[in-house]
Length: 144
Image (tube, rainbow, N blue to C red; front, side):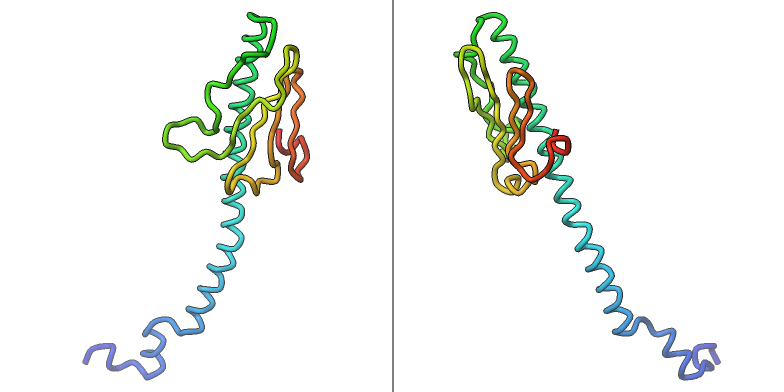
């Protein structure tokens, strides 16, 4: 006789697999973990897109400063690219524009688009004097 036929009825049932209750507990645990992980992941994605927009407007402000050094005015300076990220084929997450542009003052603004608009930092701006602002609910230190 093989050993499987000599086991009692209870032992065979235990070796059979998972019960429905055990399976439902695993499903509940996975659902709880997913409900915590997904919002955290989405916030990290928004944060990385915000970092790219910040890098873009700071880089463009440096270009504007070089333009001002040569021309003694900000009038006539144009942004090389009007969206962030700038990669070809990438989905635009921010519109970039000069919200203020006079002979002696310039403010570049990154306006959030689509899902990025729900970012807690909102729109980001930097001026020729180095003043950085945000329009969201977060503090300036959290955004910049």
